[in-house]
Length: 287
Image (cartoon, rainbow, N blue to C red; front, side, top):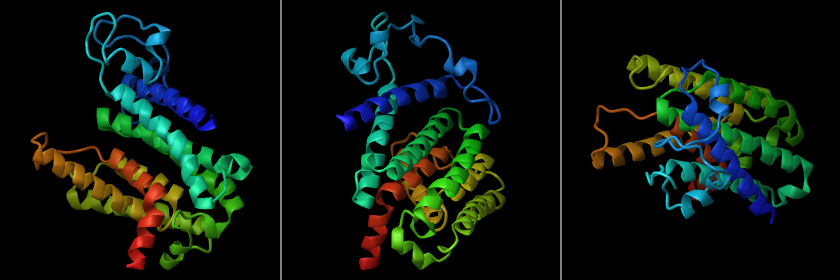
């Protein structure tokens, strides 16, 4: 029942974040949670009719209505239920992943509850960033600042409680890459590496290969993940981005000269490291 409650809560949060992302129309420095973005009743994007409460039940309303508006019959984008579903899965699988890493139910330990809540908040922020970047091609500075504050918070509180040797998602394997003795030095190196890597790409491509928003995102994510986690997150992001880009070119939806927002791939890279990084590295080293 508790997993079900988490899933439903995640659906509701995902519905809210999707609305915020759709209503946001400012630049990188514009406030994300403005009154226009979080205020006002939800309405059909086609006929403009204000929706009733039973038409706003996350995921269920879209399924029961066949993905269409009850009034005008126009199709409702699959973006709505998909965003809600992804958020719901984040609320379920983040605690589940922590449970598999520690062997302890996260609901029985205040420390693990805090750790699960921290990562849920981090992934929801990355999810909102991805929704905005897909729609507008920008990464709001407010989200980068929020991730930076979250990273500092984790280093002070969660890192202090877990200890410097247990902060990496790669566990004991992180020792292979060094810099594991000092938590703050490790996080600082992660931030510097992320910033330097994307700064180099921007300089080499003269801003055509990567945007400044990607660099501003890499620094807080480097501080959040530390070393070597940020290295693997960036690598996974490029692999996922290349696969999606090639599929888009093969289907004719993109050309070789086209572009894709990198923020969602960066978020996917972080998720790949969080959920599968330890197992993939373990499998590789055993080979």
